[in-house]
Image (cartoon, rainbow, N blue to C red):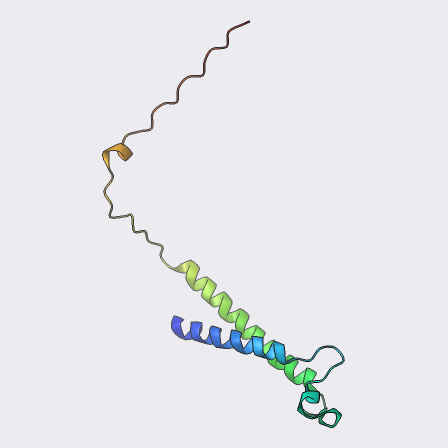
Length: 108
């Protein structure tokens, strides 16, 4: 299950980058790339902004949901350590030495 979500997350992130890069800037139209002003209705009468905006929003929602799920799964994993089987040496078992006393201030 986790592998499937990771694969979906990677595919959606790549697709999201592509869809965002396909969007036209303000005042430009993606239809112009396919043959000039007569192709302004390439994505229907509403234009490319509505079509691409809906795809971008859907990809963004899926990306956020998979990101949250993967974060939750990573946080809920049992944490282990490779040091649990390492024996404690004698030097580490001894308590730390007491710090030296501060020198007495002598009046001048």
